[in-house]
Length: 493
Ligand SMILES: [Zn+2]
Image 1 (cartoon, rainbow, N blue to C red):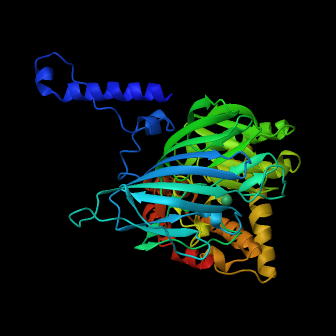
Image 2: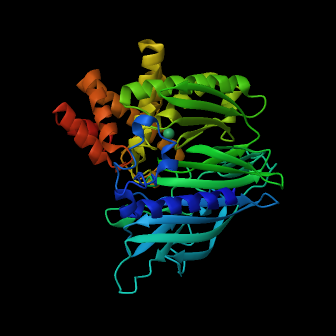
Image 3: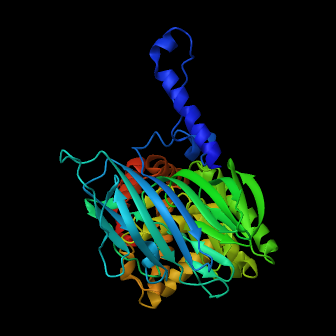
């Protein structure tokens, strides 16, 4: 592999030299060739219509991550290079595995920026966020590019064969779940780094989109499911395999590995694959059918899905699901029973591709924005695929009745609040049910057509961005031409 790469680099170098020698070109001795596309390998994760999305955005950070699992399978060792265009004087990284409910432990043992060693300063007691100062250039000015080289290790909280009941991160039985397994650039909003620790009932990952290359080496019996696409698979001599994965713009690069089997289908221009553990094939078939139908419906109704792949993975999450970019985890219990809830949960998690992965928002400050719209997207899915009566039944059973019970139990309250101000019950009832009812009230007041225009505009104008509730409400008022403050007051505040 290395030999081929070296040869390729030499050929590219010679061609570049030849093509830049303009006299040869002018004499017609060399045909001018186009500059090699620096984004070619990221674009493979995008459908042809969206291959120029990378250029439509300001220059994006690039991650090149290389990790391998150690022999005891309890630690990932890795290096990563993060290339950051136009950096400030400092960068802040999130080390998500250090969150208490992730139960991992990440340590950066070496950090260089632009080849100069720098210190890693923890910003909280658990080191879930660290700061690195960017060394100024020789003339004292800020660099126009920061190349950050990190060596890191990650102790996994669980070891293989320890089977828990709900495991978001680390080993559970033979499945290894790795959301946020690499040092991740923190988001800066309104001039402040977002470094708070989310509560265990809220979502964890909050990232800007970036371009990713990942080389991950794991025991050969594990099948890797990841955001982006696998472009190469190398069998190593020591019973391991290296999976080379790439893609962008992606909001996260998440990996799940396990002894999976797989079923695939195509829809909305993408390949949808349902990965399952032995014994769960029938549930996986249902999950695949729901995911394919949902991907098609949301693409038609909200705007197209830009990626070439969507993976649905059987994961150790009981009856819950979790969304990542191009990858959805569905709790294993739903593959065995509660198939009706599997239908709903898949519809919910697939909608997160629109409302989390592509249109992002701060899940610590305004979790209702993506959760409420994702919940209510399932109404569109049920109505479009199964008809109005089943959609109405969903509205009543999933949101009206729970919200009614919440009010009777004295749990009603403000929806637009940070995740940490809820407990797990009020989070479920208000951030999911009540905020779904806000979107329902919006649709009923404005009519189906205007509601759909609002959602389409919101999606089209904010792809790959981070939005706030103000953005959503401003678009709703602009598209409908109406003052909607009374709805926001009633349902959100
Ligand atoms: Zn959700």
